Every structure is written in C-alpha cells, then in structure tokens.
Figure 1 (tube, rainbow, N blue to C red):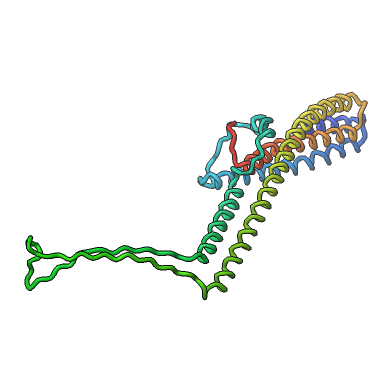
Figure 2 (figure 1 turned 90 degrees about the horizontal axis):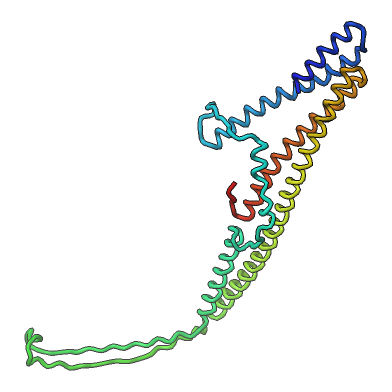
Length: 278
C-alpha cells in the first residue's frame, strides 16, 4: 500500500510541477501517505510485541527469533470447521458440570449420614473359651481338665437425648443438598447458554470472514479502477483517496475477521471441553 501510494504521490507531484493538476491533489495524497506511514510504524511495533508475547508463552528467550511457517489466512481456513456447529450440546462432559454433580452427590451422602445417626444401633456379641486350673504349669498334658464357657448377648442403643442437635444437623444437610441441586441446575443452564452463544459467535465469525474476503476483493478492484482513472485525469485525488481508505478499511476488517474465526473456534472448543484436530 505504501509503495503504491508513494508512486502516485511522486507522479502527481511531477504533474503539479508541470502545471497540469491542482496542488490539492498532491496534498490529498500526502495526507493519506502520512496516515498510512503512521499506521505502518505502529503495526511494526505491535508485531514485535506480539513476537515477544509468543516467546513468553512458549517459555523461550524473549529475544530469540521465531520463524512462523503458516500465515494467518491459512490458519483461518483451517479453523473453519462447520461440523463443530452441529456438536452435541450435552453438558455432562464439561468440567464445571462434573464439579457441580460431585458436590450434589457428596451432599446426598452427608444427608444420609445425618439421618443414619437417628437410627437405633443394635449390636450383638459372642464370647466363648476354655479355662483350666492347676498347681503347676501342666496345661499341655492330656490329664489337664478344661472347662468350657460361652456368652451370647445383644445391646440396643437408642439415641434420645441428642435428638435436638441431630435434627438441626439433618436440616442443615437438607438445605445444603437443596442448594447443591439448585447450583447443578444453574450450572447446566449456564453451560447450555454458553455453548449456544459460542456457536453463534463462531458461525457469525465464519460468515463475517467470507463477507470480509469478498469485500476486500471488491475494494481492490475499485481502488485499481480509481488508480487508472486518476492517472488518466478522469478521477480526482479525493476520489482516489476515498478508494484507498476503503481498501485499507477492508484489509483491516479482513484481518480482524480471520482472527475472530480462530478466537471463536477456540472459545467454542473450550466450552465444549473438546479439541478438534486441524
């Protein structure tokens, strides 16, 4: 863009010096070139910062040079996966749902535990053995007499005096269980909403990408036509500048659309807790 604009400015400057065009045409091109040059310098700085951020993410030295083999357009095309829009919206596989479900199950067990404390406890026991008597240690001899005995019994423990505190603990367990059920329902609804929203954003980004690509092709053709008209003296520098600004805007929108495709697909995969292979 800058090289083409500089060429136009030089040609227009010469035409103006020969008295064949107005000074305003030169000034219009100068304005456009200055704006473009400022944007270019800023883009270079942002690119350098992006490389450093990538180095930090990869855990390598900040100043190490990285060579990127894929361009943004190729990545955007690879990230267009239409079957992802038809992915099952079952939330049971998501981490957030599993956490909420486990919390509900734990609260159910705690409630059962509190209720079990109110039940009577019946214990049974059996005790049996042999005893022998003697003036000396003759227990291993056959003549030693042994006397057998056995004892069988049961015990019943009925919790009566702890009923008040136990009832309060049971009520707290019930309240906690109801809260866990509510949290599970809310989590499920929120996840379904997030999936639907992520799908909508991803589909919109794909549609916007295709539209931006078409708009860029149209803007390039319009700019070329105005370049030709301007060189032939049919169009003014203002017309050319408008066409160039339109082209620059279309380029920016195209870049943004490609980034949105990549970003929104990643967001959808995250909420679905799945990663597809490109």
